Length: 516
Ligand SMILES: Nc1ncnc2c1ncn2[C@@H]1O[C@H](COP(=O)(O)OP(=O)(O)OP(=O)(O)O)[C@@H](O)[C@H]1O
Ligand SMILES: [Mg+2]
Image (cartoon, helix red, strand yellow):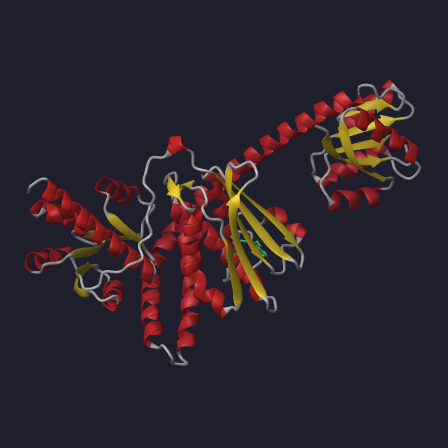
């Protein structure tokens, strides 16, 4: 098959340029060529588009090959540059190579030009791969260091944010049909944004590799959009879901992939807010032509990303938002998560015509199927007796309020000691407990209670703010207990309660099967 080649020819003589194109054609290339003969025109051509190759004349009336080479260097672009001279001479060749040209040919002896081009294209590709790997490594190191630092702060913000979110949600529900509901919505939007930032920090601090379960991307899209739906509606954004069904699963961590979608949607939302209506957001899923990857397009008709910042948007802390509105970690995190899923994320954007991000993730293959699909729980089971154990009274109240609104009967224990006593006397179906508490912490409470009654194991729901602590992580893995990361939404709490209910039913069935 013929290979297309974008070639910039720096040459004053059109006939010589045609000759070069002819050589390329003979060599099996389809040249897509542009001829320039001044520094300004060359600069414009380099700014305008990407080039695979530059062929430059050595002497021209208003420009020269060595100047062209200098100009290329100032752009920092790595494009194979081959000099072609009418007056071939060893001294010129030496000068050219010294100046950094990749090769040198006399106009009369172009026989080996095509093989030199092939070699230079191959080498440029090797250099590009090495560069990408270096950049990725650098980015990963930066992210790890930042993550640890910021996670500490994020962790401290978790409790107050949970309280604000829960109280505001309860208020919002209580104020249906009241004009003040709009004010509460504003609070919810702001706190939702803070919570997204905090979760980004915590996700960055996670050192472990992502979970690998079968993930239905369409479900993740629905879950992510549900979480941000009221904000999108408030901003009059029309959301279109164009999801291919059935879609093959990918392998990964559904929570992390949800994080990616939420960040991309939140970026689109921000860009759309600055536009007049109609404001459009389209999420489209499908499979690539080769049938190897699941693709997710996230498209907006916002103001677009100016070309001059496009290469920097994935850098940590790169943001164009005013201080206080964003951290610039959203896309860095998206990039990190998608890479650990062996996927890619790309962007295309036209000024004033909007932006499209495309995530590509390998389709899950049979051999790496290790765990079951995680089911999303939607139905609710009201009327359970629940004990909430938390030393922070505001957090305890917030959980108690939510669970009560969801129809459960809730008691609060301010310490694990109190909880031990209350469990003795009350018949609780679920124990919701903080992980970290003074004196007896969550894991210690778990051990005490399960020593008394092993069946209570499946009744625990742990609330944790430190997903990045290895102790917490080990404990949760060992026990397989259900847990919720702070800050969490109304729906998160409901889903977690459902999970515990299922656990209890399974272990009851298992113990009946044992005849115990
Ligand atoms: N859909 C989009 N439309 C226009 N510009 C975008 C879009 N997505 C990203 N950008 C640009 O990329 C920059 C970096 O995005 P990123 O998500 O990393 O950080 P942020 O949104 O500024 O802050 P944070 O995500 O931490 O709140 C943005 O500031 C914006 O300039
Ligand atoms: Mg962002």
